[in-house]
Image (cartoon, rainbow, N blue to C red):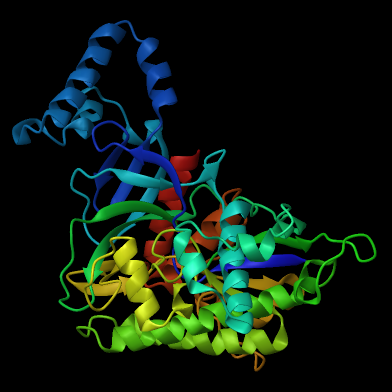
Length: 434
């Protein structure tokens, strides 16, 4: 089954790598410039005074890392003082959302060849949890036995004979996105009761409103592999039921989450509206079997990473006690959000899987069906609003296709307001990529 993966909100799947504020990037006016160390090293080693400049660079890094405020944030001065154009040593420029960056590490999202992607293992993990949840909801479960196994992943259901039948389910990695289709966000753990946040964690994320392709396939063969009827979706060409079960799992979770957030401090109005739309869409997709809604990576809650939404209040309290998860109410008490001045701006991780043959029916940014053809999504809307401008200079340039797509997305999200700003953004893009 060929599927289009559409990012509804920004997505971060950590690579384990972080960018240091002392040596790996420079922050200027809402943009992060990633330093290309290979270009920088090649340039420095070809200079007559290479040793002096390298020592100067190392000294600046040491001073920044020392915590001496009078010596910090001077990396950009190294380029200025040595008449080096920053853009000549930048691998890419990334927009920052959620406030200024002040000497923070940036957690990178996973990429291949410096292009972000969604790993198949991440997709399969999320789908496996959804399948396990729906089976246990339908058939019942033995809580005592499950609670004895802290890392329970459905072994008694999927692995009775020692061979995990989930091996019949294959998920490919997504096709890589463009190098520049990321942004940097400051995320906070916001207390849903008191409205307080904690120290921000800065992450590189795949932008919302983007598309890539994945392959989902059930590989068991009828007449050769013997599966019980409830696992018939693992036979070839039976993948539709997988989509249905994913939607069932997330509808239950979203309904619970809306209830929790409505009882919160009032900061989550935007999130409640989004989740209401996602429920409506998931219900429709469940009926049409055209796709599914799911959540990946950073931002997922305890319930989205587990089957705990099945449990009664007493069972959940027992799990929390045994796992030392505290006795506070509500549980979990915080949510990962992107916020500005205490106002929740975005949440992370929501994506849509849509069959390729029907993907044009769905709004890339909002997820509503558009059978009336009044709208083809915010990206399309942003593109249409460019018609009054001189579009030729964009699309005929060798950078045009990539730059235009990126600017259309930015325009639709309110980040670029006018043709002059489009032009300025385009020229900046060309300078950085020539």
